[in-house]
Image (cartoon, rainbow, N blue to C red; front, side, top):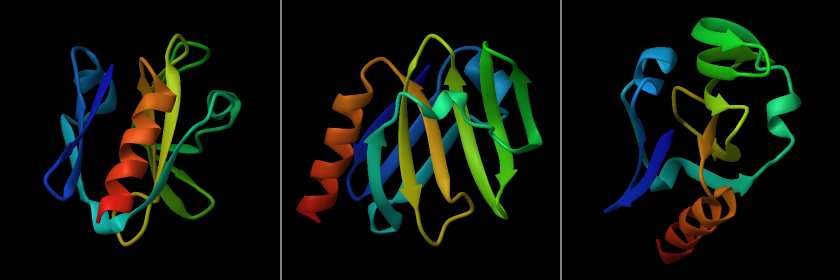
Amino acid sequence: MTAVEIVGDELVVTMQGLDRFWALRRRITVPLAHVRGATADPGVGRESAGIRSPGTHVPRVITAGSYRKDGARVFWNLRASQQAVVVELTGERYRRLVLGVDDARAVAERVERALTRR
């Protein structure tokens, strides 16, 4: 599971439980100024994540960690049983964050609200 929070002027993504192990990351912190937007995307899990660098991939179970796709780095932490939210970034190590959460629409709306308040 992934916790997505807005703390001050930053987006804080925290991997919880065993996801820390699978994703090889505990936390990603991004200034809101570098967040282009967030959307709930139920179909993203059917896309190819790209080339692992490093990460974990068990087909139809979990995709976690850093991947390269179309010349860009993408961070994944998504299990098949979770809803996906995609956060688009600019000027950061990752171009996108593909995250598994309980309620993707609520997370996307919360991020979008934070962006409009800036």
